[in-house]
Length: 491
Image (cartoon, rainbow, N blue to C red; front, side):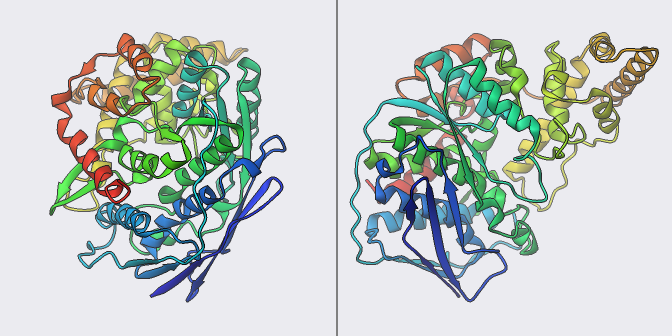
């Protein structure tokens, strides 16, 4: 049994410090605290004091699933309704996580929350602006582009939180993306800096037998916390974190609703958190729920050609690279661009290196359990769509863009070699079945911000066919049920 004591958040100037104690000690944490630093123009005194507590619990609560059984103690008086909210959020997480790990846990949740007597009241945030978490990835870049088009001077909140040995938060390419988005548009740009992703041992969940790393349970909550704090300080009250259709896939196993393993930013999770933040007059959600991941990039490159080259999607990137060009993520974003007749080298992809990797790529998903889990099904479908993009790519187009980027007597030879590799790749998958047509999921539009819904859906429908509600009704209803369970105590 772990006992976890949450300590009051400390706000000094532009920095907030979150601390906790764990007994007995656990290998999960390298340090039992983390900080978030904001730039000088973000006045943290305007952030409601109670909101800091909500952000602390939001960031830490997925860790409690790894430390079960545990008791959580805090001096703040949460009240029974908020305690029940968090316990149901944890139960939703456990129902999913336990199917992506060791033999499923059929015992009770094993988490108890004990609150104290400290009264910290809610306070409303005054404002009406729009903002999004921003990393430069295709999802956040599309949300930023939509907000530039549909609103006045939106807020973009980037979170820099390195997690060695990964270099994705420290590359020159990422810095260039942040500078360029401010030159090409006029956002209110906030870069927050945190050591949270370095506070834990990222392999801890894997060592327990789970198919996820610790950051896959936690990262998005950190980005959400930075967004909400900056929004509250600056008066931006309509806030978004991108979450596409694949993340909403669920299945029913033994009476439990099992989500994608990245449920930390599923619509069910985000919409439940929106109810928690409602007393602050903060609206929280996503603009990309109705879109498939490849549609996100297709729309970005078709509608916003002056921004699409800022896409920064590779988390395996080396310190001195723009992308690694040797992973499935790079293959997906490159082939999506190639299929559209675009040049993926604009976002730093090395097509020669990618073509070499692609011929070793196997799209099949290794099954870790006897169940058809949402993560595996989503991976299978994405693999099939990458194959379709490869088959639809013009080899002449590949040759032209490779040759255009190289000068000298070896340019033609290099281009022909890359084209030959893409030809072999296409031939290898020539008999692969076509994946289902991607359509904008009409039902998910119900969850969009009321003020932007019609305009956003009009844009989506002008580029893509619509998937009628009845085709995704079961997914919609299961997501709705997860949210309803969590928020019913609050209601």
